[in-house]
Amino acid sequence: MASSHQDQGQTIRFKFIRGMIQSLSSVRSLMRYCCEDLGFKYLLTRRLCQDALENCFGVIRSRNGFNSNPSCCAFLRSFKIIVVN
Image (tube, rainbow, N blue to C red; front, side, top):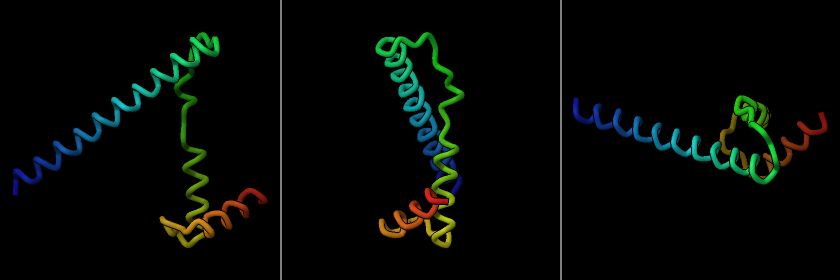
């Protein structure tokens, strides 16, 4: 039982490390693109935030009775209502 708990901790840490590497690699690529191709001098990484998108999906889920997996039709219906309002 103890080894199972320890294995889960290692799996979670491994996923975290993989996610962190993925995030840093993405920011590095974005920085390179913005500086080399678009002529930016710097990139404000604190502005790279998904909160607005997550809030939008939260509103869509709440319109569907907190259905975490709405159908395409239900999603579009909720999205249209949100855009109009």
